[in-house]
Length: 238
Ligand SMILES: C[S@@+](CC[C@H](N)C(=O)[O-])C[C@H]1O[C@@H](n2cnc3c(N)ncnc32)[C@H](O)[C@@H]1O
Image (cartoon, rainbow, N blue to C red; front, side):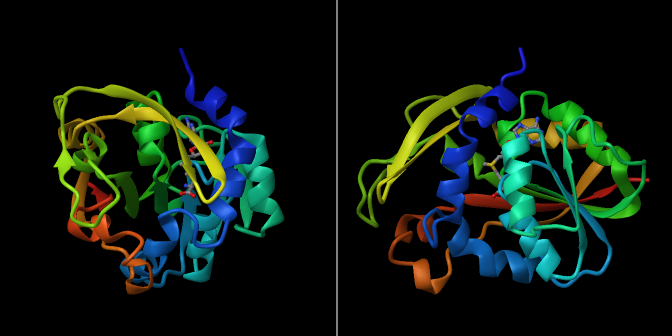
């Protein structure tokens, strides 16, 4: 059963408020590092699962001509309203309405965890990439995803009760600063991602485990000890 679009349609307004509240979620603590790691560009880029558009706006700022896509119309409307991209499409990652080999850069920022059929998404991403194009993937770090800190203090013990292995559903609400966000998706070990990349002949050429910027270091002290995100750049094998 396809549940990803249904879930995100239900929580779209919640996400838009959550993602747009200044310095609210972790994204803002990593934005500077993201800009540095991607670096300036001038080609064509597509974002899958753009949400309200904040990552597409980063790509535009870096010089790319950006197509922002998401299967949820409310998300694409919000991205358009914020002038996040040059073009927009309402579509899932497994059916991008663009010709093959069109994009220099494909962005999948914190979205592969939300997609029911990751393999189909990667197959479609591969189709729309130029032969020398780059795929950028950001994940909640699979190690971090499987455990919890046992308290809010910076030196809290990180506890992992269940197995690291296997594909597991996550479904739960986060609350902070008076806002709530209902997240749902799939948690999987690193090797599941690697196997899916291998099947599409996508090779990791660069990897980062970014740390929060100094301005957010106190608020996200635990994430300076243990990575929250994993960033990958991948290229197509010939
Ligand atoms: C956690 S949000 C990330 C949004 C944006 N990339 C960001 O980081 O701000 C996940 C997004 O993935 C989208 N999504 C859900 N299922 C999808 C699918 N099958 N294909 C593409 N995007 C999907 C959701 O609608 C939502 O906008």
